[in-house]
Image (cartoon, rainbow, N blue to C red; front, side, top):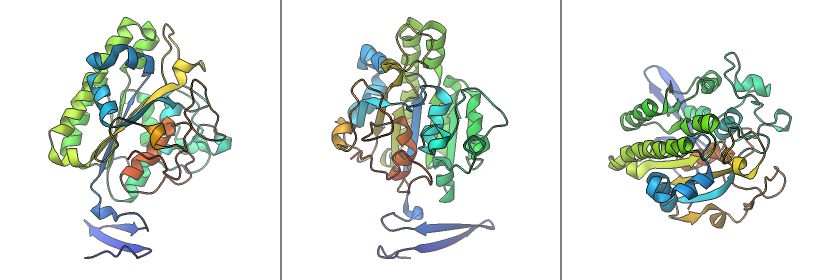
Length: 332
């Protein structure tokens, strides 16, 4: 069947095992059935840009591979309101800011509240990259090292696979899942650097050693992509963090440069190699050492992740989102 690019809306109804899916072809977007792209999002909890610089490519070869082979910045920002894990990861998958009264998701706590959902926090329905992928009939997965991420499973039960485990076993399972399933979106959270930052301090020997192990785990995921021509041709990787970690500190809640400064890297087919995201996107403002509010020209934020992932998949933005809501962040 031929799909006309001039058609405004084409509804394709597919009957599969007694279930009906409606797939809509919107102007400027390819039909979902023709889309085989995949996105692997990796968040390294507590990843310090200063540590990336200090350790260098000799100790972090896989992170540097992504930066050199893709579009990136070491001057991205966490959410303006908080530099902590759960609020920032919720911003990543919803592309919303935190503050509920300003169209945010409302997740302000950082522990495992087992009866809470993002919808309860916001006081109204909240969509995510997971729910948008599900609407196309494709699948998604979440691999996380902290039990607090169960809130995503409760909030969007359409996530096809949720695994909570330690970083080492988590990556083994995520790599196997990448090779065995054609998921549109996979989110991997690696929490080891944050653990050692809290226990031993940012930039401590234990923290640096955890970053080296984390880099090797990222390498395991990249090796899985390298081992498959299909994955090589179709998979994008987005690497970022929820916050940094100030040297010598065992806490990252303070609103200081080392804590709100994070990397943002995009790698994959057609992505500009070795380019600065700010040079590719002059409408975004490099923040220097500042912590910009949401007024005026914006820095690249980790909250852009959800809408960027959908853009790379050829899908529209998350309804109700406010970060990269027009999907203008260019990586080519």
